[in-house]
Amino acid sequence: GGGLVEQRPVLHAVAALGGAEGASRVAVDDGHMPRNRQVGATGTWVTARVYLAVGISGAIQHLQGIGACDKVVAVNRDAGCDMIKRADLSVIGDSTEILRALIRLAEAHRNGAARDAA
Image (tube, rainbow, N blue to C red):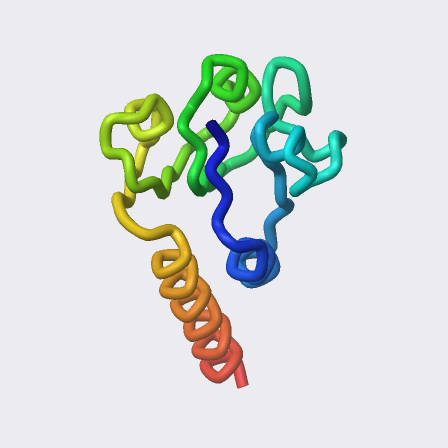
């Protein structure tokens, strides 16, 4: 399945990290994201330096769609799911809490970098 976290933290994280959002087929089929944002063998093939998979179980079609990514970071409650097995770095826990912490760190880093440059 493509377990979704609430949309705000995901979209906020995308903005804070300077990324683009995508979704599993399940999330697209459930109407949470437009079809052109579906990642996988039947959707978009992603080429990225870092792919952040939040709540994605790792169906084979999705894994095929991220095959060209350099590094995969997976956030999931299920330590045994296929996405965690594929990931270069895994974080096991509540994705909303983890995303909020990641956003705080990214914003603090950006603010610190801006201060250091001034």
